[in-house]
Image (cartoon, rainbow, N blue to C red; front, side):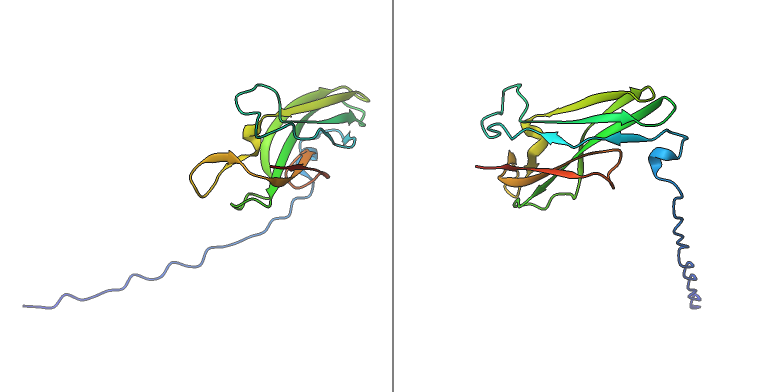
Length: 156
C-alpha cells in the first residue's frame, strides 16, 4: 500500500486595503446647491411610558431648511436618535426618519418629524421590546456624520 502525498494549499495573499478619501461631502457630489439648517427644535417627551396604544407622538422635532444656493435643490433631511444610559448598548446614531424636500433658490421650509414611543424602545435582556429611562440625543442633518445634537430625557 502506497502513502498518498500530502500537499498544502498555499495561503491566499492578504487583502488589499485602500482608503480613498472623498473630495466632497455626499450632499455636494451630485452638483447639489448649498442648503443651511436653523437650530433644531424638539418638544419634551410626552409621558412616553403611557403613550403605548395612542396615536399621539411622544416627541416632535423640527428644523427649518433654507436653500442658500442659486439653483433649485432637493435635500434629504434625516433624523437620528441616540439612547444613552440604557441597560443594553445602543448605536451611536440610529436613523428614525427622513424627508425629501424640494427647495427653490432662497426658499425656506420647516421639516417636522413626529416620533412615537416605538422610536425609543429597544429589545432588552429580558427579551421584551420596551422603553427604558435614558438620555436621548437627537440630530436632524443631511447625513449621519454631521449635525448638532439636541437633548431630552426619558424619565420613569
